[in-house]
Amino acid sequence: MSRLLLALLLLMPGALRAQEAAIRLVVPFAAGQGSDLAARRVAEKLRPILGQPVVVDNRPGAGGNIGAALVARAAPDGSVLCWGSYGTHGINEFLYANMPYDPQRDFTAVALVVKHGMLLAGSAEHGPRSLAEAVAMLRTRAGGAAVGLPSSTARLGAHMLGTLLRAEPVAVPFTSSGQALTALVRGDVQLVFDTLVTSMGGVNNGQAVPLAVTFRQRSEALPNVPTFVEAGIELDLVAWNGLFGPAGLPAAQVARLNAAVNQALADPELRLALARDGGQAAGGAPAVLVEQMRSDRERWGPVIRTLQLSAQ
Image (cartoon, rainbow, N blue to C red; front, side):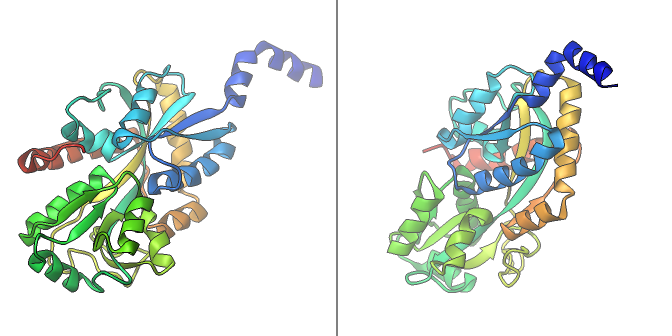
């Protein structure tokens, strides 16, 4: 039996190399941000399922476009994948005049992995202590209250919030969530609008006061924090991360990766970890991710054009 096994292994060196080779998971955002944390949790679960190392490669810049473009140019062999987002594969095409890739044409959808709620937070020392106080500040503060916005998704959310409240918040863009939190603590901004997963650090250490989340239902991470919808403000903006390969990824590879993601997301430990971070495990067929992209384009594209938003 051992000789037969050895002979079979010698006949399949390509298959062995494919199993042993690392998968490079390009995360188009800085290490430590919300998308990166979720990516690392999922990558850890995928390794034993796929029988391959899954190495996270952070390539931040241009709202995620730099890292996504790198994957768009990669060979479609499953060795390089993209941890795409609501930004890179949803709204960036409406925010950037010159996109280095086509979100639909240049990628193969694999799976919708996790959804992220957004959180409006105030400073523990300098900001409002409730959503009602934040709303009053946004509506009455001369020149508008300053809101730290570390992503294009946050910028869109702040603009939508201002429209719903008939207020004009002062948008203060940052290149990272850490910079936005620092500005909040210093009092340079009165509010920060960011993903739940990224905001939890500031909330847990007492630097930020959670005011409202954008999920339609309360988050497991902050069960005592109301939703905007509860307060009569129809803001249900939800960000997400999905797994993509380059265009032309073979169907067999897509099926294998999709099955692995769904198996990982069925793990109660991972689902709980994502929930505690402020996310919701998603999953499903590749078509679910394709539909999410289509829905976001149709919903938010006209809004971005009407508001004349652009990348800064």
